[in-house]
Length: 401
Image (cartoon, rainbow, N blue to C red; front, side, top):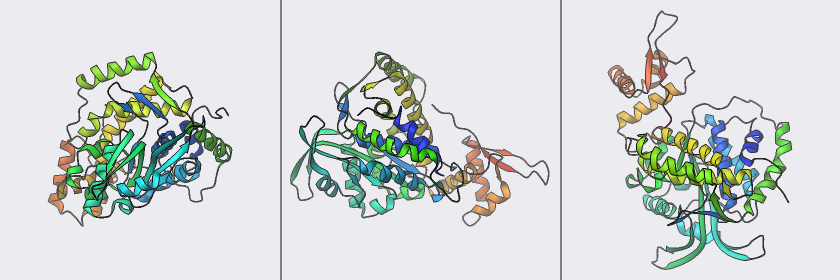
């Protein structure tokens, strides 16, 4: 059965138009849905290794006001859970628990049988899944780090010292949390391999307030076609290759732009993501190709879109994980910045900000934080001109690499 929709991700954004969550949350939800449906069926040869289109994505926002987990539930529960052979694991995670649950034999479209261990590990609230002991959190992070690239054959060492072999082991990871909880990650994971594999997606404003959400006409029209096309995507198989133009674009970007345009972040917490940004871009471009056609060809436009999106993630990652490894002073500074960032475009009033943060800061401490944010070129002051136009603070737009 041929596809119905011209582009799965774009159609999904139309489907979610009447929802409050920021569009960026819906977009990355759609990315994870396509990647999870693809499982271990498609790959790209990178010469010395293979990559799969799987994604690790965590939504980070300071408030449930942005409906971050609601955005994820729409994609997972409405569509992904209904795709045959796709396993969604949302219980508390241990490597052994996931591996034992997802190991299975699937029947491919051509009738052949294949053993695989693929899954979407879904944590709509990270503390509910990773709120256990440090030992469990560490072992889970080590396992997720190890299997991120995807493996045709994976040998796992059990706690008892035994060995288990798994085939076609590809995992997607989808989570959501407030930034403060990320402080619970063990220190060795901060700025290490685990965080470098994650797209930390942030937002500060919801799309709009909808008191009584009701399905719109586009939802009724698109729901079944979206499901049918996601099932269709899940049956695609084979090696994905870049077009000649995409190959040339990636070569120029990787060999010239990345080393020479000073894109390397200064913040140590963002460097692991930067070190893998080339593979992030290719994996995301694979998703955009799968979303659009059955060709298994990554076109130039797919790669351009992916490069833009991973660059946006890179520019925002220091804010998403701003509390990791930070002192109490810097944690409060991030809280102040987030308050200013979430204020209306005209800026945050000095008096409102001071009242909101006074339980944690005295006057001199507040002034030190404001000066720190100004020195970092993250905010600027709009001085008062009269009693009716009080002093306000506004965010300085950050350049995208």
